[in-house]
Amino acid sequence: MNESVLGNVRILAQSASTLIGRVWAGRLAASVLLMGLGVVAAFGLAPDSMLPEVPTLRISRDLALPALAPLPPVEGFWREERIQRGDTLGGILARLSVTDPGALAFARSDPRARPLYQLKPGKSLRVLTDDDGRLIALSYPMADGGLLAVDRVGEDFVARSVVPNPAVHVALRAGEVRSSLFAAADAIGLPDAITIQIAEVFSGEIDFHHDLRRGDRFTVVYETREVDGHSFGTGRILAAEFVNKGVVHRAFLWRSSEGSDGYYAEDGKSLRRAFLRSPVAFSRVTSGFSLARFHPFLQTWRAHKGVDFAAPAGTPVLAAGDGQVMLAGTRNGYGNVVILSHAGAYSTLYAHLSRFAVKTGARVAQGNVIGYVGQSGWATGPHLHYEFRVNDVERNPLTVALPNAQPLPASDRAAFLDRSAPLAAQLALGRDTMLARAE
Image (cartoon, rainbow, N blue to C red; front, side, top):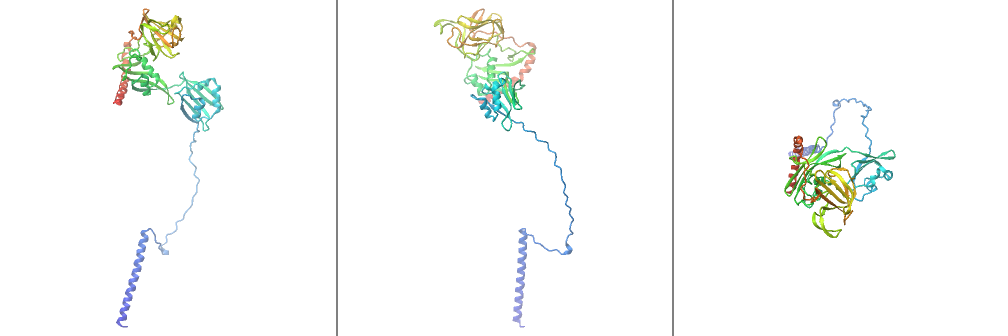
């Protein structure tokens, strides 16, 4: 073989070797790529390298479920609605999702359930119903402080009066007079009953008909009552502060060991006067004390030795002080009149009443209702004519100096101070909080 042929053979062999190398290199690269992509190659094992089979055994057992406590039966759902003006029993029960004609029929027929047809706006009606809207129980606060309770017994109902045992809490409010005391109280959510108490507590110090000024401030600590977490009215004022025309007045409730109570200043002075300035709460003075007034009924000039308080007919008239009823009857132009005799040289007269609440000879305490505003006798409209007499001589009840009640006994002073100190701190907190908000 010549050299040229041998050369060609060498070239051919090298080309083949290069081609084979490229093929193996391509296959190796492909294997690496597949492994990178998560592809696993399968390789065969020689028979002598196989692992021995592990024997398995299937086991099946029945396991008892753990004991679960039974769910309590659903006894119903309590719902509550605030009574709006114009509400009827049927309408408010419909809002409470009560679909029970038998309950409405019972309320119409049972005399004990009659208050349900005299619903008062502002109060709340609570009902307990089942899933089908049937009435199970109902409660409604009555005017006497009790609860009217209606309970289902089988397919019938039973109504009963319940005396609740309310939980007593303490509330703190502070306000500023802009137009009237009631408007200021409404602005801070103070109940009317507490507002009236404020006027009563400070009536001996402040004339709420004439002395109130824009910017006067008040702070009050009082009791609230709750039944089952729901408001059930208010109790007594525990402490109060009233700043009138820049003068600070404070009052603290003190209950003696004998059971009597009263309001006293920090020095033990009684805030209770022997007489009220006005025997009608929040009325308007229409005619003052005068030696010469044109009488609207007689159409002539004559002395008016009393004060006329305008108020709606039927407004309660209160005894100005402790005393005895000397007359509860009719007298000339006074119409229906009550005359009270008090300790010492004092007496008071209440005229033009529509009806009486006392009889001649009865004993009364300050604040007791003795009659009701009317238009009897020489009166052109419903009002109270009130006279205050000293030794049977008429004096102006709005300006005469009224005697104070007895101060706190010396034996109670230490206990009173211990009681009033934390209440004074609460009054300061309420006052400072209100002033901070104003700034």
